Length: 89
Image (cartoon, rainbow, N blue to C red):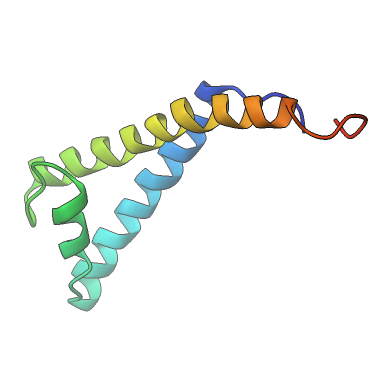
């Protein structure tokens, strides 16, 4: 695997986290669970549950993925480039 780009990683991770967020909210609503308590701690301004709060959580989940890409991609590229000599496949 070669160089990775923060935008690609960020969009993929942001989409993954946004989809996961929607599934978790749906699961909470369908099965009367208390998973939303995690979202209350992780997502600033999120409350259970209004449309505005739902979309705020969705945007914040996506932005966490963008942040992941911004941090992970340069770290990966740095450490990948420092691998053992002759083993850069």
